[in-house]
Amino acid sequence: MGGRGGNRVVSGRPQVVRCPAKINLVLRVLGRRPDGYHELDTVFQAIDLWDRVSIEPADALTLECDDPRLPVDGRNLVLRAARLLRESHGDRFHAGRIVLRKAIPVEAGLGGGSSDAAGVLVACNRFWSLGLDRAALAELGARLGADVPFFLTGGTARGRGRGDRIEALPFLGERWVVLGCPPFGISTAEVFRRVSSRLTASGIGVSVPHLSALKWPEDKDLGPLGNDLEPVVYEGWPELRGFRDAVLESGSDAALLSGSGSAVFGVFSESATARRAADGLSSRFAGWCVLATRFVREGVRTESPPDAAEGPGGEA
Image 1 (cartoon, one colour):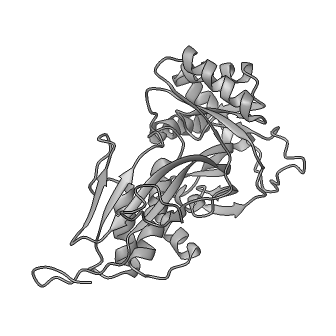
Image 2: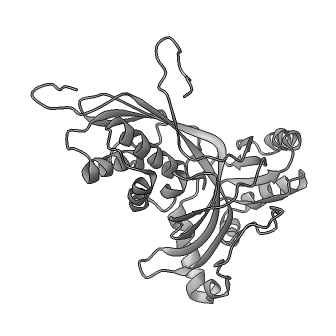
């Protein structure tokens, strides 16, 4: 540990973490909370689509990203997460060069920003040798975004409150997903603004059953899948409904919008069927990113940083 110009720089061994995307298998909007957020009951599922976050020694705390659409200043949730951890549990001299490599589409309802924030909490906690457990990191994460605590758990999990009160559920097993992301994103704030006007006008929040006893069926049937945001989103962006219908026609067991969109997914029980469907949908939906992926049991995972001999991609 050392510094320049009399400044002490506190850092450790470089860290690399992988940050998964998620889909929402269930999303119920139960009404407006006194704090202005919406009361949610949701089932998250982590999927095999990953961003990469690394941190290495530097004289200041900085962020670099390979997606030019994303800011690298305090507007980015990754840098905000690192600063929050440093201010809450660290040392003002804690520093590091954070590098974010994106694979998860933005504004797609896949939780990429929240997952990256969870990842940098894990990476910085190890890099700065703070010794915090996942529960402490989740408490910090909830201050950054409602989805952040889920990514510290991963797998299949229920989220209540704003979606930040996490309860692990039994993993649903080997299921395949065809994911469709259109060439545009959707603002979560805009979707919930439209939902709020409907809740106020028609009281649909009252009619939505509270999933207070939600337990996944023993046979892990996909019947409970549903998303209360679909009517609002499909009304504003009807092409998303078109993709959902096409996924169902391609043989999926179920299909729906993920979160507030714009991603739409179908769940398949067979890998080969999912891959055929993805190939066919790619040709039908020009400009869309269509891929086949799968459920995973984990959330943010740590990896050994690659050394010069290994080259990129060394696994822990």
